[in-house]
Length: 453
Ligand SMILES: Nc1nc2c(ncn2[C@@H]2O[C@H](COP(=O)(O)OP(=O)(O)OP(=O)(O)O)[C@@H](O)[C@H]2O)c(=O)[nH]1
Ligand SMILES: [Mg+2]
Image 1 (cartoon, rainbow, N blue to C red):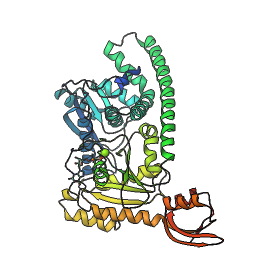
Image 2 (cartoon, helix red, strand yellow; image 1 turned 90 degrees about the horizontal axis):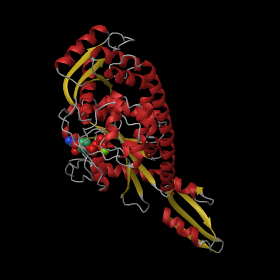
Image 3 (cartoon, rainbow, N blue to C red; image 1 turned 180 degrees about the vertical axis):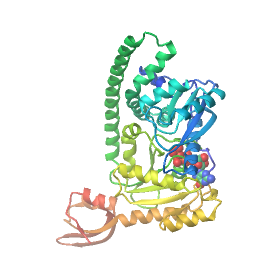
Image 4 (cartoon, protein in one colour; image 1 turned 30 degrees about the vertical axis):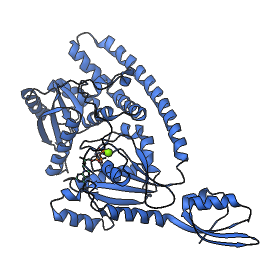
């Protein structure tokens, strides 16, 4: 499939909004159209951190990723700095000397904001803002910002807004101090504090409302889900930008938006996967993971991520051409473990083999993941093999049962024909003995006595 041929909607370019949590609307502004284009991109300086125990190339890759995140958020990256740290400074995270250095670089490059690759304590952000004299944003704030831009359905918009507000609440005093400073900040402490309290109350009320909205959306989702319960379900999961949606489109022709962007997909899409079985097999494309995904976001996306949690088999899609492939695999596994779904069978699908120059990388993957499948979703390489493996997974999950029915029970008989493959039928005066192969979940759901063979 050619890139973007199935593009369904346009990513709104809303650079009119500045980056970062201090512009999150407390009012219901989020429902307003988001496509006001302002070509003036914000100028961002990026600060990568090399923590003790981390290698420099690793920190460099993380900084590259931050660069991509910043660009995805619509910023113009004007400078980058990598800070190697021996210990974390409680006041400023990076320490006095580094703060001065970064302030100088940020000034020289006329940055509007400085983005840190680490999450900072609210007080550290405040101190850095004061000393650097620029708006400070951290990785989580950036990710939340991108999610806010990508959210299109009511569910995603609600989930992101909830995450943003949860993220904002403990940081409110910092944001306010920032506003105070802009206003001059003299003698504003009293009214300022009152304002914070008011803001907090409004935010808490809004959080309550959003949670209610989400519960309602989840209930609707649940009703839709129960009708799919009889089917075997695959879920595509993996790091962002690894090609999940591209593969989904190749396997199902779903027309899911795919793009060389981080978090192109926020809403899960579920489609029928035709593997030649009589029962429908479903496959879901899901939101991508990333290193340091803000916990507020993971919590808010609970129902979207349920597509993964409720799958019978997870296809862990991996970008084999990425220099951070090992880190990415680990991060996804960590998040899957956090979601407590370690017991769902996983298939490692190594994508983008067409873009791997180094044969050693493929050798490494084959050695470490002997059961892995190697494909190129874009070039349609290895898709047949993958489909065979998926068929195998479904087949393996089916079991053979014998059932005795009365001769009059035509209803159950037709039900068995619907959900399974009837292998043998023996009719006698006492009834019909049937041997049927079907999914265990189907068998459990049938309200009749079955004997597994
Ligand atoms: N070279 C190469 N590029 C690919 C392949 N599969 C996907 N891509 C490209 O990788 C980029 C990301 O693809 P998507 O399918 O949007 O990735 P995703 O995992 O759904 O990403 P998110 O939804 O952002 O998490 C696109 O530019 C694709 O064209 C492949 O097999 N080879
Ligand atoms: Mg996608």
